[in-house]
Every structure is written in structure tokens, then in C-alpha cells.
Length: 319
Image (tube, rainbow, N blue to C red; front, top):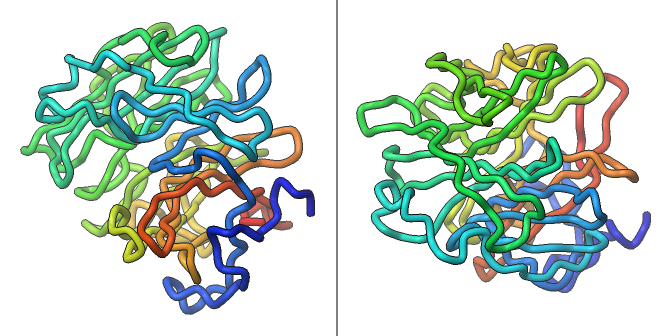
């Protein structure tokens, strides 16, 4: 296997061991080798048209990193170094913003990101755009969707998908009644109407961080089950279902609909890799790529990168 994806790392256990989080599952590959500034939480990656990669992740003003080769990463400042006054209502005046989704379309970068406080669903998702993606070049485009304490959903963890008909959809959600989806206006990137769809849920159980990826005839909905943000005690794991429509219904490998708790596990904690999740999938020249964060034994949140393979039935697996 190319050195981009070797499993050895000073940060990880050298042996592949039994998955504790999923007794019925076989052990998973460890994260591929990465180096440099790899401390991240809730990463999203886009391949730049000029070459290299741009990473956006949770942090003050949304943290940015760059890489020329998908192996060595370096800090690249914050998207909003001067703060985001428009988000203060949702963050209790904190500059800490969460879970961005970054893509490149129509000659510019689009970034949807979350503003909230831990454990609250008084939350909002905003949109910003940039011609370069670099720190300080992002323009605030407005509020996309918000949730209030009286709502049964949480407006965080956004993810944009453009379907084969050119329609724009934003999935999002964390806990409460699960993963939601709204229609966007392609000309503005903002909400198109008042419709609110449900696309996944666990009857009140822990589910968040949707990511939709189109491959072949299917849209694949990746989500994280269970708990992040507990260091080495985190139990996050990556689940998937698929549908022939971006809006669902999504079913897992066993045919269980994801709105009723369905989901097929493809990655879970093992050894010194704890709570892998908040995944992002993108297509690269050598493979489809799965990006996520996980926790080391000391509780540090680190960048995970793996190839994503597909079996004969069209289901993804981590390589």
C-alpha cells in the first residue's frame, strides 16, 4: 500500500485489535499516516482546483489547515480572524464555531458552519463564501436555518449535497429527533422554503454529523452514532445507509430505514483509536477518501484519513 495510507504511526497502536464498540464487527484499519498540524475536531476537506487540500474544522472563527499531499498538514489561520458578531446570540459571545462543511462550486468556496453552545439546541447554521478559501477572505452570506429550545431538532453539523438534477440540499442535525434536511436556493445558497424533512434518527438516541456522498446510482448518508467530546472515553462510530434519492429514504445493508434507527457500521474505536467520527467523504484521483477525527489515549483529537473502498454490492468499507 502506498505510504500515504500506511497504518504505522507513532500516535497509534501498532496492532489491529478487536473492536470494543461493536463486538460483532471485525477489526478496522487504523488511520492512514499523516503528520504536521493534525489536531482537529469535526474536519471537512475540499480538494483545491489549484492543487492541494483545504481543511476546515471546529475552532475559534473556524480553524483552517492546508496540505499539498494529503499527508503533511499545516495550520492556516482562521476563516474569521476578526470574529463573527452575527453568531454571538447562539454562542453566548464565544468565538468558537463548530462543524463546518466546505466545498468548491461555481468558482468559489462555500462554507456552512454551526453556532451553538454544548448541549443546547438554541443553534444556527450560517453560510460564508470565499474566492480563495484563505484566512480572512470569507464573506458572511447570512443565516441559513436556526433552531430554538422549543424545537425538536438541532441546527448544527451542516452538509451540502447537490443532486443529479442540480437541486441543493442541506442536511444537518444532532440528537433530539435526528437528522433533518432543507432545500436551498442554488443562486444564494440560502434556504429555499419552509420544508423540513427527516432523513435519519434513533428514536431520541445519539446521532449527528450527516454527510451525503453520491457514487454510481446511490446517495450514501454517513452519520455518527453515540458520543463524541469525551476524549478517550468517546464512543463515536461511523454508520451508513443509501438511497437512490438525495432526500431518501435511506436504508442500511439489512434494509432497515435510517429514520427508524438503521445504519451499517463501517468504522468504530479500537486500541488507541477512540471514538472515530464526524466523517467527511470526498472523491480524489487515487480513491474516495474518508476523513474524520478520533481521540488518542491522552484525549487529544486528531485527524484520521483513510481510503474508502466499495464492495461488490456497492457498500463502502474503510481501507
